[in-house]
Image 1 (cartoon, rainbow, N blue to C red):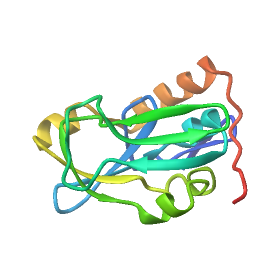
Image 2 (image 1 turned 90 degrees about the vertical axis):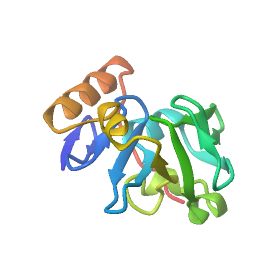
Image 3 (image 1 turned 135 degrees about the vertical axis):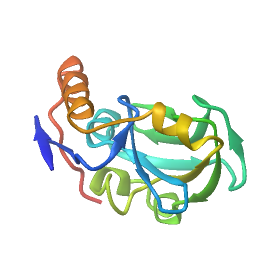
Length: 148
């Protein structure tokens, strides 16, 4: 796993190069969550509300809303998709996003309308890691994890 400015950047994930990571499933779905830099920038997450399972979302439309003491923001779908599952653990304990952003605190599972389009909107490998490092530098972040 790459690390930069205290931020964990798993090299096996796909990224929207803004706030989200995506892990493809064998069934054609993608599990999405917030990146370590994004959770740091947001601050301690205190509330999470999700769109209903079965809801279709166009790329850029919110699949969830997260709230911290300094920020309220939508979690945008990186591609046109239907929400298949939401994470009940994050719904019950939103602060989990700050503790385990790449594991227990996944947010939603999406089924893309078009699998090729979904992959075309995401980036991985060295190109993604370099873009995320530039994002970290742009916002002058030093990642840290909150305790739950």
